Image (cartoon, rainbow, N blue to C red):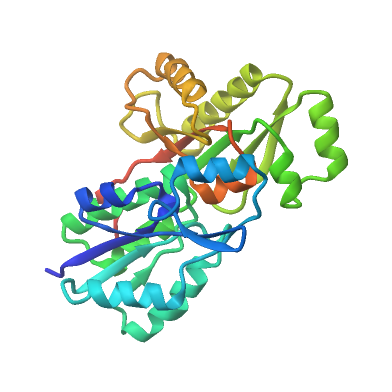
Length: 294
């Protein structure tokens, strides 16, 4: 049986410490802040990032360099027969495209997955890949399953401000001003590809209700699952350093879905730099079924 390494990037929300515990590899995402390069969870903490954000620092996201990716693969392949590499969604970064090209020189030993996920949903794909590898499923088959099921996940996010979406050109200055004037809370979604508009609300309470209805609809119609936790993971995520809102929301969700563990984690900084602090998100992801792995 082949020995398979599982690798991802820090957009999964998996910290370096957690990666060591899990026995996987997490390559840190680079950020350029005020013309200096930082690496997520290496030289850039959540607290530092949001301090820079609050100071209107010049922040841009990047992707791991080809040299760093290749060096990591070469190191892993000294101890493993093959690698499953799960980068962030190709709709949000060029990381997949770059890694896919680099993998062509590794004679099939590196399988790069176009899984179209990020944050807690990407993290779940990593955990699923680990379970498949533990069950003797090859890297090639793991890639095939994760790509076949890439749309079996959804994220809904409500943002506190449109300032950063305006900065990134995702909303006009007029639209942002009107939203601020009328206190409109946009609700965004990620279902496999990019961050897109889903709905809007006048209050955070209404926004949360809209997100909960969307998740309920996905569980029933997209995943054909009941309210129990046998078929679907429900996870929560947030941006910023204040966890009050997200844990209040978790308690609300727990009342509706008492059988779910409701894992909570910070949103990827790559998303947070586009939506700012104070956002909350809820996700639904179909559970791995080993019987469906071809």
